[in-house]
Length: 400
Image (tube, rainbow, N blue to C red; front, side, top):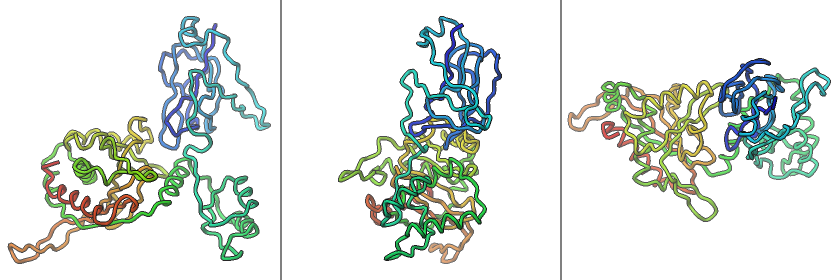
């Protein structure tokens, strides 16, 4: 009976490998077409690997907890000759390596095969890091760091004894030796990805402006809604409307040109285990607030489970983050590397507000609204005008 491989798919444009989380079938199981046979985890989500056609599971070549590259053979299916021919496997399939080979009793990784043109778009880390930290490193230092898989930014905590404070190889080796006396745990793939994104973001001059916004009208409007949008969703929709009027603040500087966004797709930060995920709402400017509450809530839940579909990540032009959920009144969020701006909302507090008509102070619910931006693209005035427009829209929630 012909056999065809179960292949590690390309799970995203910047994903080169994934870790096996769970194998949901056993040897000899009959499976249907497009049936989940394994769960794999990337730095972005947990996703399923499915069968290309009906068949019987004849080989499982991987084990949970191990990472495999895009295009690797994960298992084999016994299938009909018709299905094998339809999928282009009517020729004898390549036989991946099996068995131990590492002396530890665990299966060796099969040699990756990539039928159908499946190729990883990025090699190495899920998001490769290319950053500079120390102002000068000797070739010997660079070679040693490359050997250990470290980056220049990892030397930020090392006090240099060389000329002008340069970190010498002796300083570096002493630093490594000191680490052995500390508790060390491996960083998760998500933590590595977040660290890389922040390194790349910090290569730009980032500035932040802020202003208080009164939330009473928003809270009153929310009480009349069913389902009820959260404050962050009001902010997301207000930012979308403001950018639809003038998208230039969300442009990106590439060389000597500013590229303007093709669509008003805005992400929002969701805290997940050991990191933050940013699901994306598409065409926020063209979708009324009431129509995005349910999709927004669904994406929040999927992000917390790390099961976001590929269509709900990437391609956003800005991010909204509600740091007020942590009780914070003020923060300076950092835009993602591919974005110019991030809008932040602080916790609401009851404060006195002067009413000039009544000539007296009145209690209102107020929160701080912040906008962090790439100062190469925006100046303080343009950032302030965008933030003021968002604040004005939050004061008239019925227009959202």
